[in-house]
Image (cartoon, rainbow, N blue to C red; front, side, top):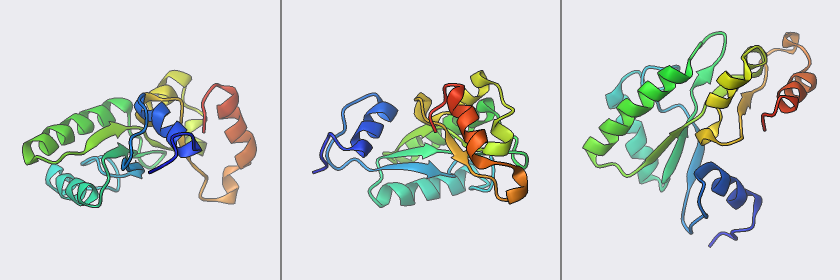
Length: 155
């Protein structure tokens, strides 16, 4: 049984808004939403992936599609894909809680306004999943990350 006072249990409570329970396994970063980015192309493929995730013991998955210069994914697109996948999971009888967030490219995210970034946080909580720049030419990582933190986002 996991100690309910560990940092992971604290994060879990913040993400879910509830006390952690024994045996709960959360996948915090999954490209499971259909037709959004480099994840599954169709709802059927997403259901197959979700089934495998649930069969491995995961009870909650945070769908975190890319939000970047390459994938200009919007919060509305994320919610639409989440709803379609939730309906398909219910129809297939797959017991998997599906919540959303995003994997926000830091170089792209610094130019998004705070309301847009808030909609991309993990499970509607205070945490923003940030993808670090893939090239040193993108600029200084630390100042960009600090800038997001100074704007009230936990990363």
